[in-house]
Image 1 (cartoon, rainbow, N blue to C red):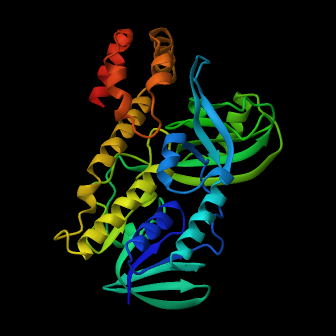
Image 2 (image 1 turned 180 degrees about the vertical axis):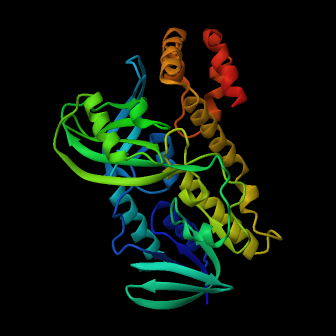
Image 3 (image 1 turned 135 degrees about the horizontal axis):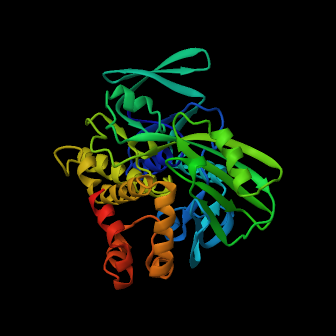
Length: 380
């Protein structure tokens, strides 16, 4: 019998497998698609500091290096934040493939084109092509994305605030500032935002996400018209992004959630590569501590407390932004412009861990203009 089975062959699943195998544990992984990295469902933008936490060589995956961002209000006010090489645009398909080969090299058994159907006690029922199979496994880990089958089998009801937004992205040709990501707020991206992530001065990943119920492709077309962008479209992708506070229940001591299935994504931006990788390590260490009898139970949820504080700050930011009308957001942008916000965030900002700079923002005397907004944020 295999000790641990992981559902989902992407960053969260492979990173969990890698850390478990390093502990010498018996692990297999099943992935529903027949090719790793496809279909890709990620914008592929990660912080430079966070990249170091991936514990993998990224040089051959880097498409572009980003120095900052321009953030656009619904009516055209811009905030510009700059740092030297603050983020990396990576080839996400190659990242998944590299992690796949690393897990396989460590001895993880990986089955592609295989889907989880059900679980009964320590028996997993899976389907490969048109054939049913049985896997015996003591522990089951769901790294199977926003609409997780493992979460369903755990009978976990999502809190009302935990929802999904629908993203749509395509590669486009045009003229771009290759040093800066552009972020756009407006009614074409209700509940989230639009983005332009340059791969070079002539090509970019352009997309948006909006609340469920919208037609993201039609909203995408409206977004392109808004920013006056025309060009060849390729590599279209559509994906669901988990948005909400951290889930407090991600384990029942037999089944566990990690990555998108556990809503371990930044509600502020939708990014999840770094936090999913860190959660994978926490889960692997928690399981190993229990199996080697260092702990009386699997303390995964307890060990997530600090990471969950960061996730909850990202959620407060998302709630704060979503609470404004376009007109209110415009006034806030103008206040931010006057307050020196751009300089403060350029000096102290952190894409992954807002707690590392939040106190510096709220205690800065230049931000007295924003007292009403800061109070609203604190109460959100």
